[in-house]
Image (cartoon, rainbow, N blue to C red):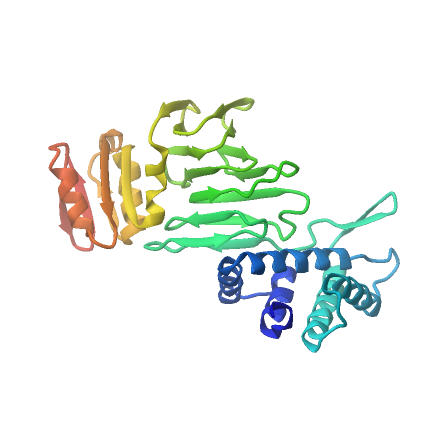
Length: 334
């Protein structure tokens, strides 16, 4: 049974208190993705964790915190405590005591809540790879190469805010009470329960949102106050320099093909394509002239079956560009 798995319980204690290594965090993410039962167990344990973090205004009593946690855990299980639970409870009580010493506690009309007491959860993907993970609310997230998402340890309790750097595909678990927000400096997306792809690398000239299912609201953070709702098979481009948004009709399923190992271009700028190839194949590409960034290309390739030269040969066959290998770099010229 999950609740008697002392290894998982100990990892969860570190997960909730922000004390896991990157490898341990990845282990928890993989374990959560295995089954709905695991995700439900994580969410129930997280709720117990937060309900146990109640402090007295004058001092923190770790033994009382331990007792509060045991009472809540026993109520959830309908059983007496097990040795594995006891170890977890002591870890949580100790973590709560440490957090109390270093964190600011806000008390409002007798209601006690921790604010900003817990470290953020960060999930990153290196160049040349993709990552699949589930957030605590059940939302599925794919991260493309060189991407990162950040959310608070309280994600799913008071808010569902995720900060994105790079490209992510989201299948959002529906929650009418808590909208799901993906935030970047230039563009933000709000959803209730949808499927969409969001690309905004810091060094790209454009940000892009493509909607596969449902409905989302897009806010332009460059031109403050500008926002729009879009329907499925619509894509929004944001020019980061001008702040102008452009909506087009597409087959949005294609924009998430990278989650299946494809490298797909749909009228993308060569400047952004070069960066996409750099991230996907872990190479260095140089455009010989700045105006080449504005060329647009279509293409669909399988990353594991087609090499970087296969893709460059296909782009060069259009007559718009040529390339050469120069030392360890690829140089593209008119």
